[in-house]
Length: 497
Image (cartoon, rainbow, N blue to C red; front, side):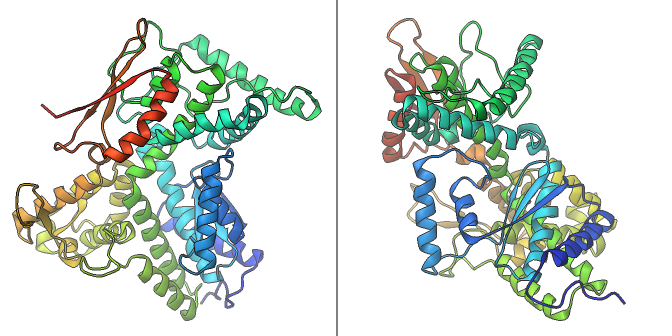
C-alpha cells in the first residue's frame, strides 16, 4: 500500500512536486492526455486580482479599465461578497498555471489536475485553439504589446493612446474573424516579418543602453500571433467584411501608423480569446472531469487520505451544483455542471449503457473506450456541436431540462419540449443554439466605403430573428467607430431574407 502524498493541510514546494508527479502519472498513463509542458506559479491574492483585471494575462499593457476592474473586484473581495478563483491558466507553451497561495494542499492538488492537465490538454488539442491561437507566440506578443503601447504613451501622450484603446476595446467583439483566416501573405512579406522580429529583439536589448531626451520611440511592428496574418489590402477592400477592427486598421483614412498598430494589438487579443467564448462548457467540463478522475485514481492508489477526499468531494459538489430554475440562486445553466455531466455520462454510456443509450449513441454505447470518445470530442467539437451530438435523454431528465417558446405576439409562455423522443431532440437543439456565438453575437458587416468621395462608411446589422441592436449600446459604440474611421458612419438594421 502506498503512503499518502500528504497528510497536512499546509503545503510546501516539496509536497507540490510530489503531487505534480503523481498527477502526471495518472493523467498520461491512464487518461492518455497530451498536454503542453507545465509551468506552475504560486501567486498572492493581490496578484490574482491583478490577473483578473488584465484579461487574465500575465503581461498586459496599461489601460484605465484594468485599474477600475481591479478596484471593484478588490472591494467586493475584501467585503466578503465574492471569492477568488483557486487557479488561473494561460494557453501558452509551456502552459502556465497560477495557483493561489492560500489554497490548502488538497485544493492545490485539485487545481493542478484541473488546470495543468485538464485545461492544458484541451488548449493543446482542440481544433479551435489550434486554428486561432499560437501558444508559442502569445507571451512574446504580449511583451511586445506592453512595450509598444508604453513607448507610444511616452511619445504621443497618454490621452491619444487611451482614446484608441478605448475605441478598440469597445469593438473587440466585432474584431474577430469568425469563418475565415486573414489572407496569406507573400513569401517576401514573411521574410520581412522574420527580419523585423530579429531587429525587434536586438532593439529590445539595446534599449537598456539608449537614452532619448525626446522620449522613447515606439518599436517596429511586432511578432504576429499567426504566421499567415494579412498584409495591406491591395486593390482596395473586399466587401462585405465581418471583422470591423481589421477593416478599420487597414482602410481607415484617419489613422496614423502607430494607431493602426495599437488597433492591431487589440484585434489580435480579441481573436486569441475568441475560441474560449465558444468552448466554455467543453473546456470547464474537460478540466472538471479530468480532476475528478485523477483524484479518484490517486485515492485508489492510496495516495490521498479520506480526509482529503472529503474536502475534495465538498469542493467538487459545489462546483457542479446546478440550481433549479425557480431557485433564487439560478442564473442560467452552470457550464461546469453541464460539461462535467455530459462527459461523465459519456463514460457511463460507454461502460454501462441502457437500451435507450444504445438507440441514441450506437457508435460508442457499450464499447468501453470512453477515453477515446472523450479525446475525440475534446479535439473536434465546440459547445453547440458537442451538446447537439452528445447530450443524452438521461442527463436531460437528471437536470430537469425543458424548453419554452417565447413569442412576442403570444400573451403567455408555452412549453415547447418535454421528456419524450421528439422533445429530447428539440430540447437538445434549442440548448445547443444558446451556445452558438454566431446566433448570440450581432452580425455587423462593412458593406461599403466611399474612399474617394465623402469617405462615408456603410455598415449593416443583419438581424437574427428580427432582433435589433440595443439602442443605448448602439448610441455608445457608434462614436467609437466614427473616431477610428474619421468620417461619417451609417449603420443600417437589415431583416433576414
